[in-house]
Image (tube, rainbow, N blue to C red):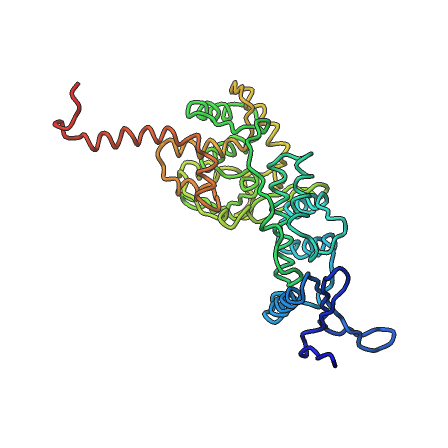
Length: 384
């Protein structure tokens, strides 16, 4: 009996070894540079039954027709595609962020496996291996990077699904070895300002400390501040300074889109800043005698001297002045959204998560306030 030919485009399904079936379909043609003839490109599917193989072929063809996959895409390995992904990201990332991505990518390896062949199990195996030598927090960062790389491949139709989506989740753990946030009290902040004003330091140092405490600006934002950004009672934050190894300090955009912001400050602070010597509105507010950017090392040197003079025994960092600004505002009852906006956080949740230590005091004040409101009528008060 003559064998019936399968419908055009559905390929051929034949039995092979141990009762299994194999299906082969044509996915396209490629010109052979030597023979100058079109070479047929095929894809193979296997299964326990003819029906199973046919289902796989149908599903694959549906995804091709729907534009979900590109059957002619080059079979790139993870290493090859991750290098391509980094090249594409380089145009949108800040230099430091790019270097971090590049460094983190070096420990991600799938033994030259092709992207489309990497499974959820492969991803989990890699994550478990990383957890043997790295902290959970670090592995969470690698996990996020992996997810972005595979998502890029999915969008380019190199893979059908992102295997990282269904991979294991790395539980966030508190690392007690990480330096804690150290915040100055109101009294300590006042003392620090007085000592900064009295100590022998460059003319820019006290205004720098005053601005840091009053605005919560990041160190890079303070160093990049120019006179044209000063208003009558506002500061427009739209630039930052980034230190690049071997290349010196360069101006760049702020950390996030939300970091570009205008915040209100006291007129007395503006007067202090305007009184500093400068040539024109393009001058940096905090600068050397040669009108150049202040070195990070210079700020650290005088800040260390200030801590000693102020008798601060806690391991305070310059960035803790920003934390102090936020904490004092929250404890004073300032709306958390306002605090978040002043800090330039991308979302209020970041502010809430970072400054939970300041919320218990607000909770106590809220309790006293609601009690006072509800029992304002003397007839409602509890018997003493």
